[in-house]
Structures are given as C-alpha cells and as structure tokens.
Length: 323
Image 1: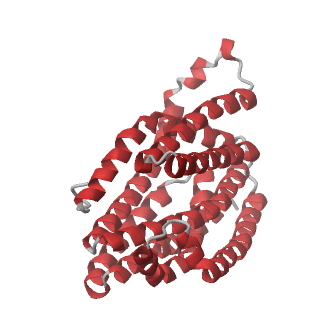
Image 2: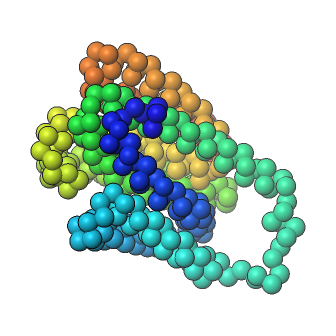
C-alpha cells in the first residue's frame, strides 16, 4: 500500500478486504495444485466445472452480500473466501474420484525421489520468476495509475478486469495447448506437436477477432457492469481502445506460454518474461511523462506484444527439438 500510494480511504478498503481474504491463501494453493493435476490428467470437464462453479458461487454470494446484506467490501471478500473454501473441498473430491490412488500402498520411493523433485522445482522456479515479473508490472500499473487520482485508478481497475476476462478466455486455449503439447512431447510425437501448434493458432485468430468485435460493439455496456459512477465510466471509455487491442498483442504469447509449459520447457518462458519486463519498464519510463495514463496502457500493450514476439523466436528451436 505504501508503494502504490493511493488515497487513505482506498488504503482502508484494501486493508478490510485483505485481512479477510488472506485466510484463503492455503485454499488457493491447494486449488492450483488440483487444477493443474486435473488438466495434466486431461480431465478438462472436471477442471472447467471446478473453475466455473467457483466463479458462479463467488458472483452469486457477492451480489447477495453486497446488495441484500449491505456488507460492502467485506461482503465481496467473504464471498471470495467462501468460494475458495468450496473449491478446496471440491478439489479434494475430484482428485479422490479421478485419482484412483492406492492410499494403503503409496509409492513412497517415487514420491520422495529427490531427482524428480529437483526437476519439478526447476520448472516451478522459472514460472515463479514469471509470476514475480507479472506482479511487478501490476504493482507499477497500480502505483502509476494512483498518481493520476482515484478516478483514473478506478477506471484502470475496471478496464484491467475486462482485460483479465479476455485473458481467461485465451487461457482456455493455452491450457488446451499445454495438455496436447505435453502429450506430444511425452509420446515423442512430432506430428501431434505440429498439429497442436497449427490448430491453436488457427482458433486463436477466431477467438481474438470475436473478442475484439464483441468489445468494440459493447464496451460501455461491459464497463457499466462494473460501475455506475458516471465519472469512472466516462474515464474508462476514454481508455477502452487499449483493451480492444489486448487480444492481438497478448494472444500469441499466452498460447505459446501454454505450449512451452506443456513441453516442460520453462527456461524460455523465464527469459521471455525478464526481457518483457525490461521492455515495459523502459516504455512506461518514456511514455508516461509524455502521455500520462495513455502512455501507461501503451507500455502494458508493449509488454504483452514483446512476450508474443520473443516466444515466437523460441518456438523455432522447440519445433526442431520435437520434429
């Protein structure tokens, strides 16, 4: 909060939200493990059901707690916490149902194999570095946005939510690419790997065009789903063109992230994200003084576009490896 430097009333709301939601952190970690395991087992319907049902419950509880019980920001936090608790219970049930584990005779020698653990740790460390870079960018966006005032901060928050919804839809394709890339690499099937890349890119074009068209036709409607404060709506409309071009800039990088993760080749992902973070820092350093909040959004789009371009360069070497 000190780094972001928002208004005192914003900080107070953040504290109220945080001190409730932090208790869900262990549940979130468990849900991530279960979701990854389900997708790795190609239990796509189960993973989709888990994600969709959690989010629907979260939305329903948020509406109930805020509009009917008038719990305001604490109501949103409790709604999310309860949905995380539901997800934690559901994840245990789904892993038990689909796992078919012999709990009486667990293969402890395999579970405690330090070489396998080190290999998994290497993959995870690279992805943790990627996450740290994303958090750095998000914090810079929040801090710079807050410096322009509470209205701009609120408008950016709405637009970032819409951007995230688009990213979740593209993530679905990335997860599918990860599953089939992993299957191709595991079977040393170069044809399946090439077909996965081709099919992913083809449907990415369709999805990106659909998202852009839908947002172009209905952007103010979507903005008003998040706020009824006219000043914030007007400010968000001013900058919504940057969200419009998000799928073009980010789509390739996101689906290739899935491909590289499925192939367990995460070093290129780490390198890409470090370079993209440098691009973002340089762009916002140069553009924000010139164009204010528009410069900040251009820096974000440059950050996403650089990820796509860099991973495209790495893709050629990955193709040769599994050709």
